[in-house]
Length: 386
Image 1 (cartoon, helix red, strand yellow):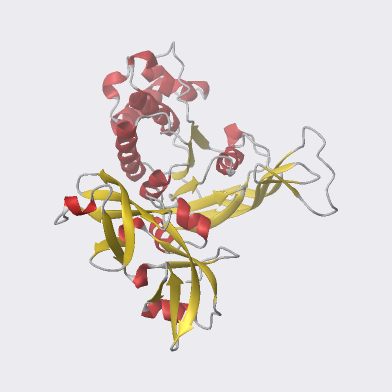
Image 2 (tube, rainbow, N blue to C red):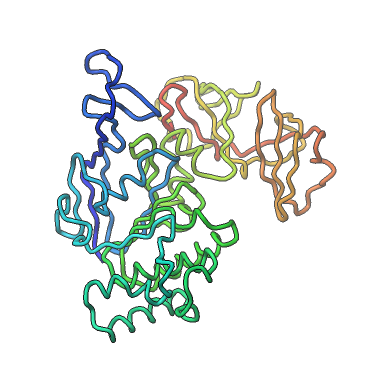
């Protein structure tokens, strides 16, 4: 395994056609990406140090630059600017085959005429590794992935999850320093995705390699990554552990992207009453918790966006009035879609001890929350104030 260092990495795709005239020095925007005189800037100012054996997840919406970044690490995309190191070696101009990396794609890309064994052994045969070593490596990888019984089958006789295991096995037989994975589970159904996530966690504990994993699914990011890199429009928004980005999002985008269901947002105003910071929202004034008072310091009064996660809302006897539009029974918990002054608000409440008739569709309830769990974002900059 090896560390991977990306220093101020940039990717620019040259313009295929002339762009409209713009004011001097002012970049254009197209599909939320900048267009400069050089071309469309897909990734810029990307700085990341990945430690030996770390599992890093790049996550973000479609078009944010995460797959482009992965392909630059793999050598499949030319780097427009910056430096990329794998281990102690600068690899900007090193061909993919010489980078000691392996990649698993979204599509399985297996050879249909070859058996599972031959698919996994193919790269080793190209390197002219001796047959005994090939056999040992293939069978060891198959054992790790639980596909030993399928070694004599061809891909068409396998399920989607089994094919993806073969694709992963083909990558790990090479003992790469870095294993790159580009949305490898997106073609699987929900049940298989859950199963394969668990398999990847087990795999990570059994092989010595550094993982860089790309996904648009924040559930995968939260469950798999040691650290998550959240991207938007070619820029890094935040880097942190799953718990850090969930509990302390740096801005409004991260707050709404991470967490299912999405964080509830309310327009509000940060004010000071009797020396204490309070938030005015939905016609009420809520005093913030002690830690929040310290975090705000000498913050001036301003318009804010108040963020509250659905799991932090609770049904109460008093508080904020809401109409229940939809009640979704999820087993141990219920998702309530509430209408609060024409705004859709989601609450996730445990069903244990809950009067289900009280929260059925069409009923009216009150909800409340612990002020200490509130997130505050500046209405103009969208930065987290806490």
